[in-house]
Length: 593
Image (cartoon, rainbow, N blue to C red):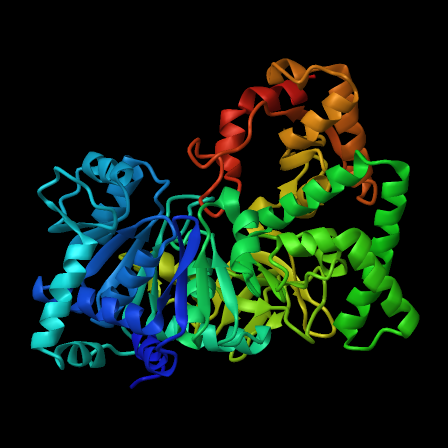
């Protein structure tokens, strides 16, 4: 067995944790377990069928599905015989799917539902084989995964040594996947990641975050995103932990109270929503409720400080924390399942205020940093190693440099092999010394904690020559319970402006409290009372910024950003270029005035 090869490690756990739940899926209202032994048997079966179809080492296999146990089964089967998985976001259009398929040239595809089959047909890409997780009637060229598993079990019974022979041929330098970037700043590029890239990143991240086989994860970020693939799939499967699959993003909170996870990995949007919901409830409550809440928050900060500094609270402070939990935080703690030991935040910047709030509420949160090209984790906070506002220290075996222009450069075993079919782009980002140029601006403090300032390409240079990093300002605006998203504008302009998306649930409560009609929404957001409220929120949230960084004008976008409309990526990052093009009239209006 080679410990640097993903399926080799997984099958060690199939032996070590055979009767333990590997995954949990909700069926008929109950989360049903699949044990490591059962999962291993299914992976072997699928892999043997792929081999019988002539799939060989290096062949690409596309995988397009929402998060479910079959995703794990199919991916692990592919990489067990040396095939290369090409994950595809199920939210992509048929045209986008077509472009990725033409570039990666997969021989076959696994997919989940009838709706996705329609997209596959519309893409006009010709696959040799099409395998569905759901049973789909009337499609003669579509094979059902359950039938394939049964066929594979028969092959395994006839040739019991075949699977091990195939798996032994897989080397740590072989590609595990071609993961396409989400394309927030241009066309997606195929990032080639090897088994060693992932295994090294898993092992080094686990050391920082203190993750154990006893942990339970809740999976809801898209598995096509490298953060979830590595953190929410490979980490638990290579460790012997358990993964529950959320029914949907909308049901994450509900499912947390059913699965009782000890760890949850997310992008900041979930934490922003939790914070906004709590703060909206506080703002609409009585003065007594507000006093109790802020008293509890103050007591919680004492707990946070003691936890981060690894000191003990005095008996009186501990008594106040216990009371704060009972009066203020218990409901939130129970909603997150009652066993949560750590949130892990990545994929985008997390506001320090939100991190402080969750930590004070007894929900430890550890922010990390990485990119698709780095498998993804290169720095992370962890137990006994926390600096709120930073993205943590470098994970083991990772070396950083800060370029003269502030760009973060990194070298380590998790850095990608390169971009698929794009040597020129690879040379652009990996220099002669092996350092990957992240495109992010940042700095280290005296204790080697890394702070991200902004994306290099995002920096705004005003007409007056002032450099403005939009990211911290956008984060500050989202701390308002009424502002869900913000996009800063001002490059080569005389002042900074913003496009804002309001939190409609919070605004509806506010409207009811002030007896203002909420519908139609397009009329509501033009009302003078609403504009004054948002203007006041913007002023309050940006009071600590320099004069040239302050938002002088704003416009409210009349709808939420959505994946379907192309305004955010499947990992919930705002596509600024798309937003600015779509709402160019609103931008022009602000500067014309």
